[in-house]
Image 1: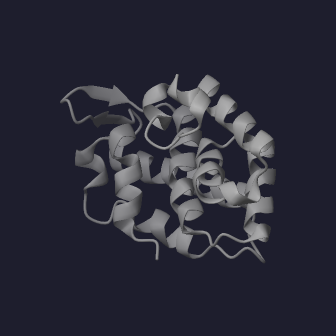
Image 2: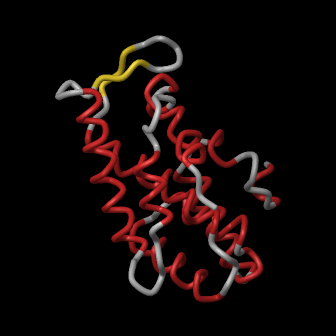
Length: 164
């Protein structure tokens, strides 16, 4: 079951604890994720709705400056270009709840090819690894290592090449 605290945790480093811990902050995003149904929604459509909702929530709470107090005490302006990555972080909560079925694997794989979603790649690699060939898994590991900072994948990317 998707809960608001899941959303708060994935957005905490990006938006700061003081904002994400405000009462009710993550509720609209959690509600959106809970409304997902594969027969009527696509991952791309859900990500777009999350990004729009996130923008509206931030604008309503922060005003036109879109400045937020980070955990280290600094004040940082959130740029609209960052919202796509924040939405992907939130989508990761949905992906982590998917059942390991071939239909979900195919949908996630198509979404990765369409968008390059890091959260979807992580889910494929960590939860759907049995659905992938060894070559596919190695290719995905290489893409992740080359595209993202080590701190984002070193805890769960466990192939031999990544340990070097």
